Image (tube, rainbow, N blue to C red; front, top):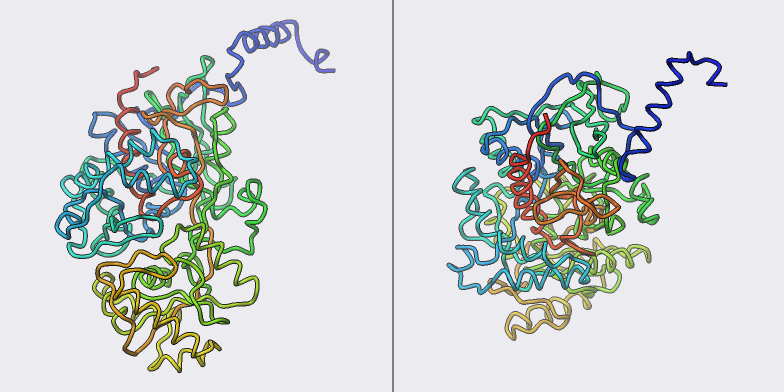
Length: 509
């Protein structure tokens, strides 16, 4: 027995420790112990280097805090660096220039409708009201450049409100955030895994256990160190779309037969660490599938850009019937389910546009169509008949579909309810271009339950002192369906809030 191996003094120590634990608040998790000696101490520790983590680091450092920005992968940016480069801004200068009427209230209404009213209204309201100011912050402080003529109407939005970055990629924002941080003396600590969140006897988060020199996905790689967070820890570790085992806990359908748009590091280590200290995770089963991705390439790829453009300026067609099968500007869940239904029946789903569609696409994403053709994710045909023959489409049904879409341009009334874009033109002239579509796992709408200050709640209902979170690591903003370009706004807005609040937290040491 254990008691036989203990000295009298050791036995007293065990009793004292047991009594101390039993005297703690019932919600304190004592398994992650405070080390006798910390290897390093900073004011704010931030986990993750995507939009949210970089924004949090910037604001915390500007507020005077010392910052450690940790990234487990060998490059910074996460999914944000491969994001499509669109930002939802209701009431933007470009909207006003183009005569598009919009408001934070209308965007909030769109988000809640798409989210099946599972969104937390206060979070949606705060996001929409802060969008214009945050857009200006990216321009004025970071130097982010946006296209000055093009604006996108993503599915589920009632008006065009999504601004394109100058290069059509989230890397424009990430790179500008990184450059701004470097000027402040902050660089991401790459290949540094946060393994555990450390909580003291009072239930306050006081630091993290890390592995420096970590080599993803080897969980035992790297040197263990203990990093104190004198003021706070900010969790911006993103979602788990690339973690097939973890995502199936919440949605068993999402097996490893589904590809993901996410980078390989979109896994569950951070989620598990937060859960281990009792952090409250909500709506984790709400996992988004992106409809317009291509089965002819791995990961996010580039084919999605053509199919997304066609959703406004072309048609999505069931190859077996030659007919449209869904409102191309419905929310992502509606469109993904419509495509999956047809794929399960053995039907190809195609995004078709003509030379005019290609010309407007080139304005937004210069050189992209050429790259897509070279990569074999978009295909070019001289005539509609050639296209129909290649994909075994009933040609007369396809021509009738095109005719109906063209009539909608004249009448401004689409037969299946798609809003007709002000710049929409008839599909008339070859060459014709087509991409195949097959949905891929894209975004986790659920996550940590936070308040308006980005503070994280414990499962027993109180706030966890010293713990903040932002971005895809959090839940409640998007509900059942995230509208495209709202995730970028969410991460930037709440990342900034988390950084400011973390820096203002009273230090414990």
